[in-house]
Amino acid sequence: MSNFIERPRFTCALGGAMATVTALPKGVPILHAPSGCAGNHAWTQAGGCGLQVGGYCGGLSIPGSNVQEKEVVFGGTERLEEQINNTLKVMDGDLYVVLTSCVTDIIGDDVASVVRPLRDKGVDIIHAETGGFKGNSYLGYELVLESLLGTYISKGETKKGSVNVWGIAPCFDVFWRGNLEGIRNLLRKLDLEVNTFFTIDDSLAGIQQAGSAEFNIVVSSVIGEKAAEISREIHGIPYLMTDLPIGPAASNEFLRTVGTALNLDQEFVEKVIVQENLRYYQLLEPMTDCFNDMDLQRYAAVIGDSNYAVSIARFLSDDLGWLPEVVAITDVLDEEKQSFIMARLTSLTSRVTPKIIFAGDSTEIAGQVKEHWANQQGKGGKYNNPLTPAFVVGSSLDRPLATDLGVAHLSVSFPVANRVVIDRGYTGYRGGLRLIEDLISTMIINR
Image 1 (spheres, rainbow, N blue to C red):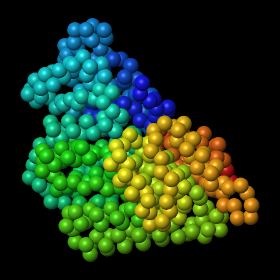
Image 2 (image 1 turned 180 degrees about the vertical axis):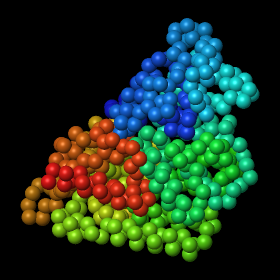
Image 3 (image 1 turned 90 degrees about the horizontal axis):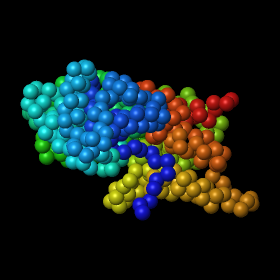
Image 4 (image 1 turned 60 degrees about the vertical axis):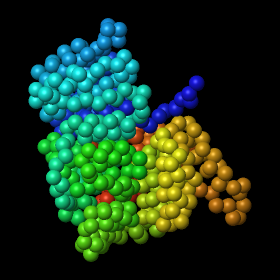
């Protein structure tokens, strides 16, 4: 029997696909699924995404075919066709995306045969096969991107200075709106035209022009790579993969990497970096006396997916001067990706080398972190150096761990149930300042 994951930090592929389509401007998902899928995912999303649920045709208003035993036995394509026609009459959308479920993928319903005639009639509708058993929510995000790239976005004449940004999964990066905006602001400082797909400033007309981009930028070492490969095959657009840039050190590296890839004037890029660093440290400087006098440096345990865990650990170590002792990566990764992430975390500028854990089971993560903490406490004595004071940066699932260790805690990675998130983000220079505010505010909130 396969191992189970207790308290996982993602949903199935369908959940990720639903969140992704809902985040598209006037995108309407149509589920070809049993009745429970939409409800279960809606409440999971509400409880884990900083109370972000619903929106335009999202949450419990998502239309679905509600397949029953009859459809399982005789096939559900007729029911799906009926549901699509009803949705087109009732739901005012600019793009309709049919998403399949475990049941309909297993019985082999030919969804393409239902969608294709409607596309031939001029209806903006596509589909993605997103049966939950195929993978987790991050795969669902990629499957929707792949469908957009293969069906909805056409190849166009390359527009110099235009870029697409991928690698941030709506809702499963709880701060996705703010993070995408932060990335866009960074790139606009290099005079680039940026297509982020999922913010309120994006449009479907802009998304349809994504095939004309000069470059695709994937701000993840894991999420979005397959979509970027497909775009390169279909549209001929090259891509680069970077870490999620949080704070000045990572943002400096990000801007230089993008500048080199797009052959931008390096003197201009360095000028932007100098200006942004000057602003960052001028804003941070008034707090530095309190930071030192109040001894606000901390040992840290960082827990999250490959996007957050790596980037936040680097920020804490290289920008804030904290000491990340343990970094737990909750993604399901192959050995090659694990080796890449380990190399990133063992090459911190501060030369701090954290213990690295690859696990998705919350109980296993907590056990390994507590074991490491206990092993470092020593047996007392004059030269004992226990890991205190400390801080857990993770998800809402890690609050009990922080309580057991007697340390502060901030939820930043999915699921986040104890914060309201609207458009907050941690990317870029300003995002680093926001993260410092949130970390230290958590520590002094009871003063």
